[in-house]
Image (tube, helix red, strand yellow):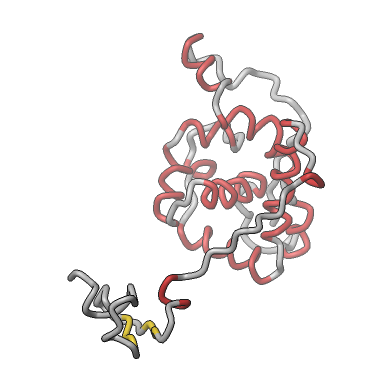
Length: 196
């Protein structure tokens, strides 16, 4: 069964009533306020609806907050365990994801649920849409024209991969490159010039 909130309809009650003016101002100046106001309602929930049955099965977690969780996990570079903790306990995340109560139903997600959502997005090529929408939103808010984006002319290669005569071998040692010209003094990857 599908569970989504109507993100276009405003709440009748202010969810920040319990905050004093200083903490409220801090929250309103944070990323969470911008995320909730500009990004959350535009997440591509419609694109994942066909993968759920509206009549059968257990109810889904709220799909806007789940897509928001996936986006925030990648944005903050968190592990699944860290993302689950932030989703459960972090008030900024609750505000950003429009989680209005502290019940387990609203604020708890298992690592398995997170994995399932990631699998759904990955297998159906939906990750691109998940990141394109907020990128466009932020670019519009900041007045950035993506057509004027500069293409970077610098391309960085791995030192090991481009060193003349070097081959990198996987292994526990940091000095895992073997050089065919190890005796050459001008070769920076040679064993004689490397400090252990």
